[in-house]
Picture 1 (tube, rainbow, N blue to C red):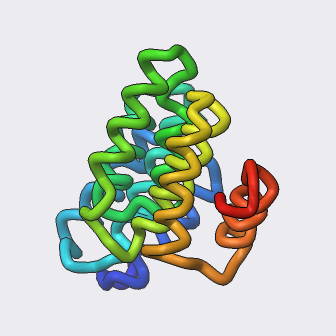
Picture 2: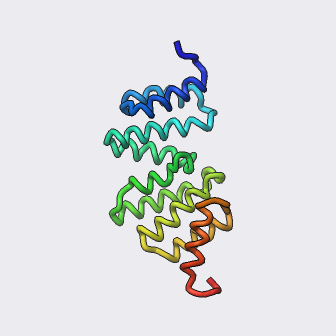
Length: 168
């Protein structure tokens, strides 16, 4: 019999996910974990495994709903905010909806805002073709949540190489 503790349950979900277990089989186990351990931060990791499972199985709507659920509370977890941006669609109305969603979650979990600003900035630049808005959001990234990693380096490189003059 399996131990009944968070670690065993956590590992069970991860192993089932890695074994490509169908999402409908994984879902009750993840839901039990979410219900049983509502104070654990790592529960969002487990929910992202479920979202990715639905995506892998072809249920894009269910996957997107779960990506959005996680992005509202832990947007950097398994790049949940990026997953929303990647899976919400590429039509102009869908891109605007993605922009609005990302803007709405800034501030809900301040320690993850860096990730939302990063995703939003490059969505604005690459998909919505709104360079002034992209630069504004990416400047906020640098000012409010600077990161000494690849994300920060990408933002700085973009802002420096796209500046119109020294004043920008």
